[in-house]
Structures are given as C-alpha cells and as structure tokens.
Length: 288
Image 1 (spheres, rainbow, N blue to C red):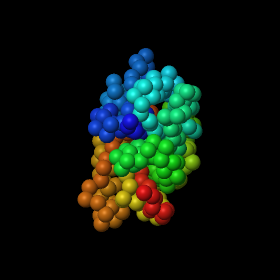
Image 2 (image 1 turned 90 degrees about the vertical axis):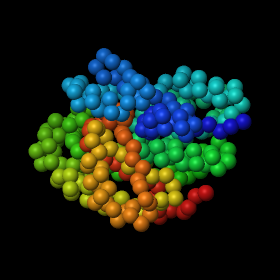
Image 3 (image 1 turned 90 degrees about the horizontal axis):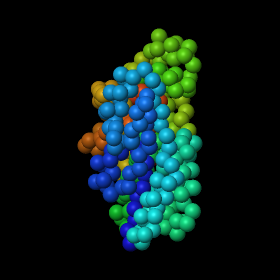
Image 4 (image 1 turned 120 degrees about the vertical axis):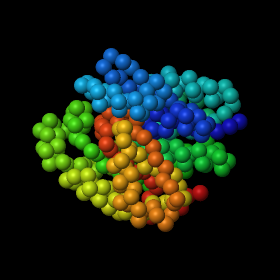
C-alpha cells in the first residue's frame, strides 16, 4: 500500500515536475475564444501567455468536475492505496467542492486538504506533502500536518498591470486607466483563501521595495521548508531584478532560489509581468 499525492494544475507545477515527484496531476480547463485547453497538458505556461498577449478576448477557466476526481479515487481504492488531495482555495474555485462531492464511498482512503491558496502558495504545500510522504507518514498524518501548517504559508505578489483585472471585471475601466497613467503596481497577497490588495506602489522599483518589505514583515522565511518564486509571461527580467535587490533575504541561507512560471489559472487574472514569492513564515513553531 502506498500514499499518493493528488493536486490540480492551479498549483503551477508543470506536468513533468509532477511526474518526477510522483504526483497525480489533474488539469483545470482554460477556454480561449472557441478553443479549450487542459492547463499544463495541452497548453504550457508559455503558450498561454503567447495566446493571451495576442488575443482580444478574456480567457476563462473551469473547475475540475467531480467525475474526474471520482475516477482517480477509484484507482486509489482499487490499488489498496491511500491519498492526500490538495486543492486550490475553495474561496477561489469550485474544484475543492468537486473533490468533496466525489469523496462519497472513498472516505476510508482519501483525505482532502483545502490549501486555502493558489499558484505557488498551493505548490509549496504540495511539495511539503511529498516530503512528508517520502519520510514515511500516512495519508491521514500528512493531511493533519498540512491542515496545521497551511496557515503559515505566505504568498505575496507584485502585478505589472491592472489590465487583466479590468478585463475580468475585478476593477473598473476607470480604475485601470488611472492605474496605467500613474504606473500603479498593486501588491497582493492570499489571506484566508482570498486575494487581497496589500498596497499600491508607483512604478516597478517602488513595487519591488514594497514586495520585499511585506516579505520581511512575516518574520522571515523558513528555509527548512519548501519555498519558491514565480513570474508570469514570457520574460523573467523583473523577477531577476527583484532577486538581486532582495539579496539580503536569501544571501546567507541558500545558494540558489527555485523559480516557477505562473500558468493560466492565475495568469488569466494577473496577466504578464507579475512576480511572486511563496514561503512558510519563520515566526511559527517548527513542524516535523
């Protein structure tokens, strides 16, 4: 009997990364015009932004339906295995609800954890689950630890443009225009499963400074647990500049920083040019 880790593509691991880590990877769907893609499978992160930049229409995403979870749960049970299912925040998608609908009859072998996060915040929780699995923990034990430690996950991001929030109806056209004229760069975070604006900076330099300050406010980064940075779009130059400017946060702790790319689930709303950091806050009790 083995312990499986199951997650969705909103965590922005690539399918190749998931396969290497022995993670079951379920893709959300991305609709661009009349075309439908499987996030991370028939549409790579780079291909998504190439299409997004060229397109006049706003992409949409759809949750993983219950029957897809049910099929995977049946495989787990038939094999005599157990599994931990880590989903993107239930406050941002119905995907977690789909997993719970599919749970009927599989409660003895399936444990669902609402990450209360998305993108690389969800990703580092998945990576932590893999670490606990490899250390020999049971699925129930892993789920218990994740429920405890997910409150310590911090995700902070700097957006380059308000255009895609406007397209998705998250802000008004007037607000987006004003932000563009003033070069406003919003800094956002995921708190209690929802996206919140921490502040607005004028220009990328001030935005990066605010991102660095917000990271420091969390009491530091626990480098003994998974952490990562990410960027959206086709160019990571803004992220590389942020890394250089924020050297004091990492310099004495790690030799290199893991970098991910942002896919269509969150990329639809933030657009290209966003940068983000995800980590477990240092000012909390250490877990196993």
